[in-house]
Length: 89
Image 1 (tube, rainbow, N blue to C red):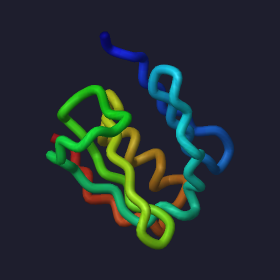
Image 2 (cartoon, helix red, strand yellow):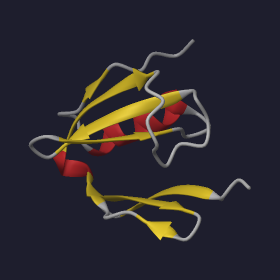
Image 3 (tube, rainbow, N blue to C red):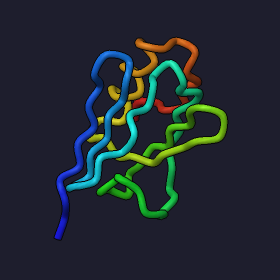
């Protein structure tokens, strides 16, 4: 059974909910880098077409928004210090 996964941006926070699990909100100001990922570890990413978000000192999370490029571009518009390695294909 696939659980509904939702990524929302509210104010300066990225909120992630996967089924009945709600992850701790990520401060967009703490995001350091966004890159493509082929990692198959368990994560709130229902697709294998994933991106990795590095934030805080050592934290990271793998997600799979429908439009990775627009998602990364929007996060970068909120925090221009993010190193955005996602390119439009």
